[in-house]
Amino acid sequence: MIKNHRSAFTLVELLVVVVIIFILLTIVLGGLGAVRNYANRSLCISNQRQIMLATRNYSVNYAGYLPFNNWAGLTGTTGLTPGWAYMPNAYPMIAAYSDSLYPQILESSALWPFLSTERTTSINPATGVITSLTSTVPRASAVYRCPADPPPWDADIVSAGDRGGTHRFTSYIMNGASCAYGGHTMYRLYQMRFAGDGVAMWEADSTPLVDQLNSYGRGGGNGGLFNDGCSFPGEGLSQRHIIGAPVGCYDGHAEYILFADYYNMAAASGYNRLWCQP
Image 1 (tube, rainbow, N blue to C red):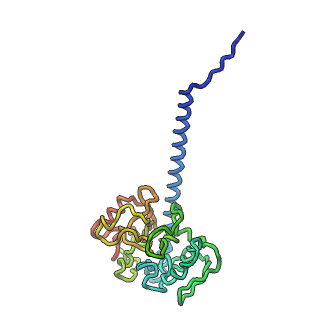
Image 2: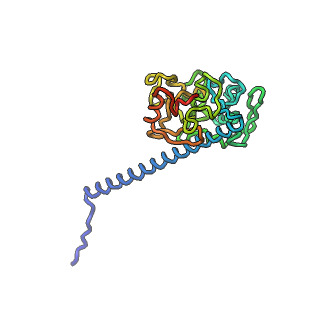
Image 3: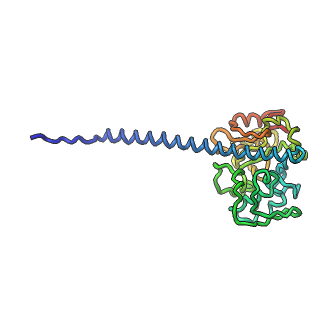
């Protein structure tokens, strides 16, 4: 009589299989995370490239001048002068809107006509008052938002009542160099030092990697990164893209810059790609 001997897995063999499966899952999931991070970085670079190309087109149409960089707070001091992200006088007018419709304020900006023909609002040029025409978010507003920057966007403490400030409709900040950090009216594009690869904008964050106020002595500080549409270089880069962040440049290109390179320039004396005011 022939006996049928059925072999079974030992406990050690089962543990080895489980460990192998765990290692394979770790490799696969890690790879997916890296792919997602790279995709978000690429989209963010593309966003800033589009904004900088719109900036250059604006300059061509306005005697070489750069668009107002929204310096001097949310309501600003220029009233009805449209900035790159919003018209200062329009900001308080739209503050009562729901968060989902807040991107409509972008339609009051100087760059909007160079990015889209879409209109979901009506803007009174004499008062800056914005009236909503539709209850939809303008599709082109996605250009102003990094895909790795999820809501809520009203958690940043800017000042009482601001509820996140400009972070509610954009992830990006302009370099204040284009108005000498409040010391001059807007310059023409060709006047900027390093007009080719000078850094015109970057992705800001409410928790910068380095507290500029303690580390550098060239202006800026910690905590008010979305109090308006532009900042000092040392006020911090977003940490969403691992070891660096995308930046947009005056010649229309955008690139990924390492934190070490960025903050070395921010701390340096003299002029460089960040401190590029005339």
